[in-house]
Image 1 (tube, helix red, strand yellow):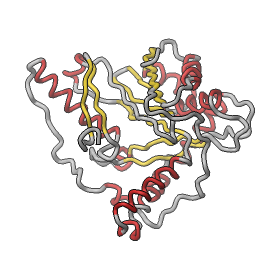
Image 2 (cartoon, rainbow, N blue to C red; image 1 turned 30 degrees about the vertical axis):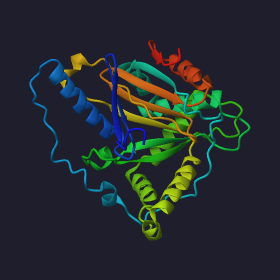
Image 3 (cartoon, rainbow, N blue to C red; image 1 turned 180 degrees about the horizontal axis):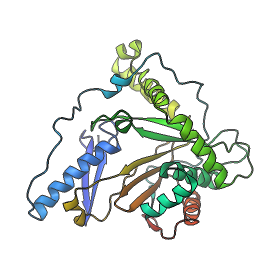
Image 4 (cartoon, helix red, strand yellow; image 1 turned 90 degrees about the horizontal axis):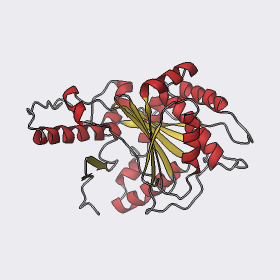
Length: 321
């Protein structure tokens, strides 16, 4: 409503261009395609470059890729349990944003020593930081991190519309007064191994689709649907503590790279998930962003202390310090 019903907004400040996108329109991968189109056209006008941009007209964004892989017979095994919720009162006026910028090459070498991926390693760092900062060790609930999965890579599809699902990574810290980072890393690695198979991913798609395919809900009046979706969104968020999303590398055409210093992605927190972690990379810069709507900044400090144990150089940018 504040943006005249547009689903995206473009702003700028000095040499920084911002693209804000409502998630209904697309996901992080789709948004990066629009961002690249914007900056390419900007460079063509600004520096009087030849306009030879090739758009992928053959991409069909009108086909619902989810329906293609939806199997109503598949069900996610086990009833989801309520996850530990981050304490603190969310405030829409608060936006504590911390960017940790590290070398992709250096982090890859660390991950290689532990036989893990970058996402697995940073998920473990995130859980370890949560455990040592804002987790109540007397709680009977687990820290659960939602990890979005880019389905384009899984099924070799091309679309700029939403095409993702998510898996829930459990931490196994409940009831433990003390736990080492290596213990969390090993458990996280096992969680990814079990939950990131193609069969499991198809289960997640069916889980996400079954509500929308429910006939009584589809026939219900719009105001009832809105109330139901609001309740459903609240219920889904209660089974996860937070979210960590790795968009992956953002590739830029070679001739435009000299004009771009860095590209950073972040996802806004909400009332249930008060802190979110977003990761992307541009050339050798790996950008880790922690974004929160609460005053407490202990998590950000613990996260930095943990990644500092192995990395030689870390650039920290914040809107607070």
